[in-house]
Every structure is written in structure tokens, then in C-alpha cells.
Image (cartoon, rainbow, N blue to C red):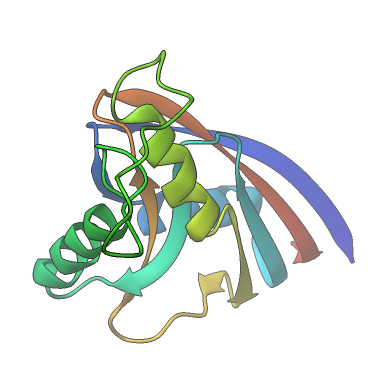
Length: 151
């Protein structure tokens, strides 16, 4: 049993989902990682990682619209009818910045994957995604920590 650490850089096209399954599969093949556990960790505070459906893009669209509804740019939503919406305190980096931090806090910044026969163990309709919460394009780094057998 061995451990390996690497970073992969991924370009995002602004807000939305980037399917990174093939990037991870390429890394597994290149590293000759046969069997074990692969931990992915995003090294940023305004994007996240998730496993979700890769067959129907409407799933990701609905997920994005739901997240925008519960974490709006305009500030903290009212909970009670007589409350006013509260503006975010952290607003220097643009209207999408604080909502991006909250969305990251509500989602995952790391994912554990099982690797068997140099293949990610996923369901038929699953993919691994980087979810960019900011509007601008970014280069994001994902740390890969593999524990298992290499050939």
C-alpha cells in the first residue's frame, strides 16, 4: 500500500458545473493507481465538489436555480414576514462573492472515491463535478490524495 499526492488545475467558465470525471480518470491511469481510496479536496473557498447526475443537464440546472433561491445575491433572505433582508457584510469583491462562500459552506469541499481496477466506482448516471460559484472564469486546484495499490 502506498500514498500519492498531486494537484490538478481546472479551468472554469464562470458560474456552473465542470465535469471533472475524465480528468480524474486520466490521473488514475497516469499514476497507475489500481485499487484504493482517492480523496479530492478543492483548494478554494468559492467553489465546491459534488457527485451528481451526468445524463440530463436539467438536473444541474435545477440544482443551480435552487441554490440561487436559498442563497441570493441581494443579501440574507428574510425568515419572518416582518424582517428586512440583511445585506452581506463581506461585499468588497462583488455581489457574487459572499453568496459563493455560503454556497461552498452548504456543499462539499472534499469527496472520497473508491477506485477499483483503475476505475472510479460510480453509478451509471453519476459524474464528478467542480461547481464554480463565482461569475468569472477561474483556474481551480483540486488536491488528489490516493491511498492504495499502484502498479
